[in-house]
Length: 274
Image 1 (cartoon, rainbow, N blue to C red):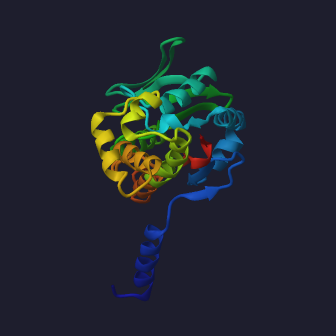
Image 2 (image 1 turned 135 degrees about the vertical axis):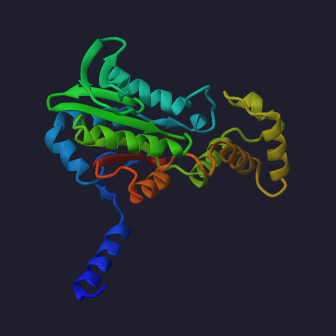
Image 3 (image 1 turned 90 degrees about the vertical axis):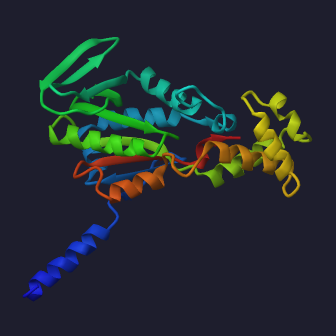
């Protein structure tokens, strides 16, 4: 470093790299927070106002039952399924866009062939896509998957953005963490009182394993039965390596999305109905 200008450039570069990439936007709906990178929200509302209105309608319709927080599913939780069904009901096409080694293909099982562009790349399919007046909008939903799903989603959006197929990406994820689940579930299980841990499988409409029951009995020495139940079941479902907003924010701050604008919608504890 021979000049003061080079030193200032280096310092300025470090400052830019350390700055958070996501900026919060006011959400008009209770129970959600909105974030954007590279003016994604501005692009959405200015270029695709009809898409924004459609997304708001879906978010307004969506709520989470307390039981769904810990209920299981084969490949997807009931929470993801319910949200996905709302998008389908609003005519979004499921898993309809992706790049393979030869071309981009837009395809719907119900509507058939949509469009195709020859390229040389490979990605996975976006969860949902819909064509609006100003073009296609793609959305990925990540409720409680492995956090590596964000690497895949962000890389995919980056590719699609670089090839000019999308103007930005949208990701919906949870900002409901294990501690939030414990608080909600404690209030939920208090409605069943009085009950013993071993009675729990008969009281709820989802599977509670014998191992979990034993853990609840053990924790009941220190906590009330509803609180012990909440702690055990929340811990069994929400680990440290699953998708949530904090994980997404960290990966975006690491530059995983490149320069692709990303609009992030977080689902907050207020959307849970107890």
